Length: 137
Image 1: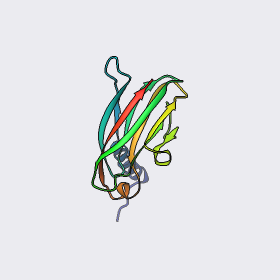
Image 2 (image 1 turned 120 degrees about the vertical axis):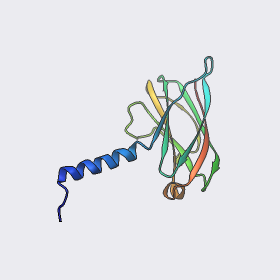
Image 3 (image 1 turned 180 degrees about the vertical axis):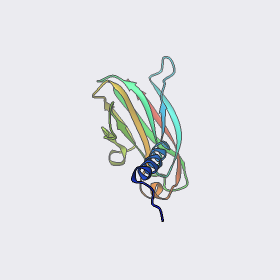
Image 4 (image 1 turned 135 degrees about the horizontal axis):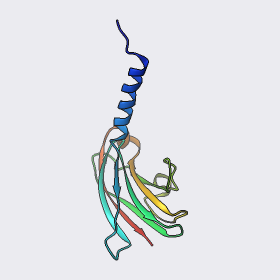
Protein backbone atom coordinates (compact mmCIF):
# COMPACT_ATOMS: atom_id res chain seq x y z
CA UNK A 1 0.00 0.00 0.00
CA UNK A 2 1.36 3.44 -0.95
CA UNK A 3 0.76 6.47 1.25
CA UNK A 4 0.71 10.01 -0.12
CA UNK A 5 3.80 12.09 0.47
CA UNK A 6 3.41 14.54 3.39
CA UNK A 7 3.54 17.61 1.14
CA UNK A 8 0.79 16.21 -1.12
CA UNK A 9 -1.41 15.56 1.91
CA UNK A 10 -0.76 19.09 3.19
CA UNK A 11 -1.77 20.52 -0.20
CA UNK A 12 -5.04 18.56 -0.19
CA UNK A 13 -5.82 19.64 3.39
CA UNK A 14 -5.00 23.26 2.54
CA UNK A 15 -7.35 23.21 -0.44
CA UNK A 16 -10.12 21.70 1.66
CA UNK A 17 -9.73 24.39 4.32
CA UNK A 18 -9.55 27.17 1.73
CA UNK A 19 -12.71 25.99 -0.02
CA UNK A 20 -14.58 26.03 3.30
CA UNK A 21 -13.45 29.58 4.01
CA UNK A 22 -14.63 30.72 0.59
CA UNK A 23 -18.21 29.71 1.44
CA UNK A 24 -18.58 32.90 3.47
CA UNK A 25 -20.03 36.02 1.85
CA UNK A 26 -18.97 39.66 1.91
CA UNK A 27 -21.14 42.54 0.74
CA UNK A 28 -20.19 46.22 0.51
CA UNK A 29 -22.94 48.52 1.80
CA UNK A 30 -23.59 51.78 -0.03
CA UNK A 31 -26.06 54.45 1.04
CA UNK A 32 -28.20 56.18 -1.58
CA UNK A 33 -27.12 59.78 -2.25
CA UNK A 34 -28.33 62.04 0.56
CA UNK A 35 -29.10 59.13 2.92
CA UNK A 36 -27.20 58.12 6.04
CA UNK A 37 -28.72 54.64 6.32
CA UNK A 38 -30.13 51.66 4.49
CA UNK A 39 -31.78 48.27 5.00
CA UNK A 40 -30.02 45.13 3.77
CA UNK A 41 -31.53 41.66 3.58
CA UNK A 42 -29.87 38.27 3.50
CA UNK A 43 -30.03 34.58 4.22
CA UNK A 44 -27.59 32.29 6.05
CA UNK A 45 -27.46 28.54 6.45
CA UNK A 46 -25.76 26.64 9.26
CA UNK A 47 -22.23 27.85 9.93
CA UNK A 48 -22.19 30.37 7.08
CA UNK A 49 -21.99 34.07 7.83
CA UNK A 50 -22.22 37.32 5.87
CA UNK A 51 -20.02 40.37 6.43
CA UNK A 52 -21.65 43.68 5.48
CA UNK A 53 -18.80 46.18 5.07
CA UNK A 54 -19.06 49.95 5.24
CA UNK A 55 -16.66 52.83 5.78
CA UNK A 56 -16.96 55.28 8.68
CA UNK A 57 -14.95 57.82 10.62
CA UNK A 58 -13.86 57.79 14.25
CA UNK A 59 -16.46 59.50 16.45
CA UNK A 60 -19.41 58.77 14.18
CA UNK A 61 -22.34 56.77 15.58
CA UNK A 62 -23.31 53.49 13.95
CA UNK A 63 -26.84 52.12 14.42
CA UNK A 64 -27.46 48.42 13.69
CA UNK A 65 -30.69 46.50 14.20
CA UNK A 66 -31.19 42.91 13.07
CA UNK A 67 -34.57 41.22 12.68
CA UNK A 68 -35.19 37.63 11.59
CA UNK A 69 -37.88 37.42 8.89
CA UNK A 70 -38.02 33.63 8.38
CA UNK A 71 -36.24 30.52 9.67
CA UNK A 72 -36.33 26.74 9.25
CA UNK A 73 -35.09 26.54 12.86
CA UNK A 74 -35.31 28.73 15.94
CA UNK A 75 -34.08 31.92 14.25
CA UNK A 76 -31.01 32.28 16.48
CA UNK A 77 -29.32 34.90 14.31
CA UNK A 78 -26.99 37.57 15.70
CA UNK A 79 -24.41 40.10 14.52
CA UNK A 80 -20.99 41.29 15.59
CA UNK A 81 -19.47 44.66 14.70
CA UNK A 82 -15.85 44.21 13.65
CA UNK A 83 -13.57 47.28 13.60
CA UNK A 84 -11.09 48.09 10.80
CA UNK A 85 -8.32 45.49 10.60
CA UNK A 86 -10.07 43.05 12.94
CA UNK A 87 -9.08 39.38 12.86
CA UNK A 88 -12.56 38.47 14.12
CA UNK A 89 -12.49 40.32 17.45
CA UNK A 90 -15.70 42.33 17.80
CA UNK A 91 -16.39 45.69 19.43
CA UNK A 92 -20.06 44.68 19.74
CA UNK A 93 -21.54 41.20 20.15
CA UNK A 94 -25.32 40.95 19.72
CA UNK A 95 -25.51 37.43 21.16
CA UNK A 96 -24.53 38.97 24.51
CA UNK A 97 -25.91 42.51 24.22
CA UNK A 98 -28.99 42.32 21.97
CA UNK A 99 -29.83 42.66 18.27
CA UNK A 100 -30.06 46.46 18.31
CA UNK A 101 -27.37 48.99 19.19
CA UNK A 102 -25.97 52.44 18.61
CA UNK A 103 -22.23 52.71 19.23
CA UNK A 104 -19.65 55.48 18.84
CA UNK A 105 -16.95 54.27 16.47
CA UNK A 106 -13.41 54.32 17.86
CA UNK A 107 -11.46 54.36 14.56
CA UNK A 108 -11.78 55.48 10.96
CA UNK A 109 -11.88 52.78 8.28
CA UNK A 110 -13.98 49.87 7.04
CA UNK A 111 -16.21 48.17 9.59
CA UNK A 112 -17.96 44.82 9.11
CA UNK A 113 -21.31 43.78 10.48
CA UNK A 114 -21.04 39.97 10.63
CA UNK A 115 -24.40 38.15 10.68
CA UNK A 116 -24.32 34.53 11.87
CA UNK A 117 -26.26 31.66 13.48
CA UNK A 118 -25.64 30.22 16.93
CA UNK A 119 -26.67 27.04 18.75
CA UNK A 120 -28.79 24.36 17.14
CA UNK A 121 -29.51 26.47 14.02
CA UNK A 122 -25.76 26.69 13.38
CA UNK A 123 -25.04 23.04 14.20
CA UNK A 124 -27.95 21.50 12.29
CA UNK A 125 -27.68 23.60 9.11
CA UNK A 126 -30.92 25.57 9.48
CA UNK A 127 -31.60 28.52 7.18
CA UNK A 128 -32.67 31.97 8.36
CA UNK A 129 -33.60 35.11 6.44
CA UNK A 130 -33.09 38.51 8.02
CA UNK A 131 -33.06 42.28 7.61
CA UNK A 132 -30.38 44.59 8.97
CA UNK A 133 -31.16 48.28 9.41
CA UNK A 134 -27.88 50.25 9.26
CA UNK A 135 -27.03 53.91 9.62
CA UNK A 136 -24.01 56.09 10.34
CA UNK A 137 -24.31 59.64 11.60
